[in-house]
Length: 100
Image (cartoon, rainbow, N blue to C red; front, side, top):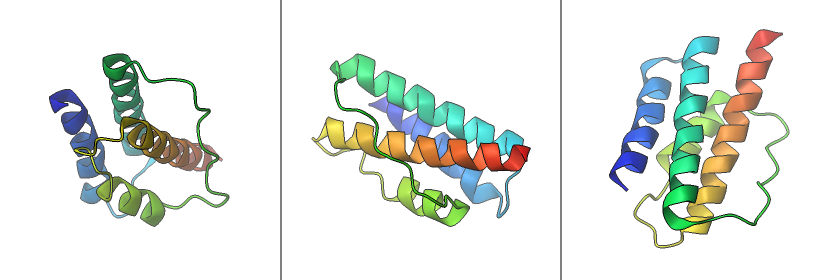
C-alpha cells in the first residue's frame, strides 16, 4: 500500500497547494488518482462493479474533502476503489470545465 499512499498524498498535496488550481495541476491530480486506482485493482485483483456516478455539479471543495476522507488503511478495498473512482471522475469533470 506504500505506492497507493504516495499517489493519494501526491494528489492531496497538489490540491492543498493551490486555492484555485489550473488545468495542469488538476490533470496531475487526475493522473495520480488514475494510477492509484490501477495499482489497487492490480494488487488486489479487484474489478466487477461499475464506477459510481459522478456528482452533478463538481467543485474543488467537494474533491478536496473527499480525498482528505479517504481511508487507505481500510480493509474494504472495493469501497476504497469506488471512492477513488468517484474522486477521479470529479477531477476529470473539473479538468473538462477548465477547457471551456
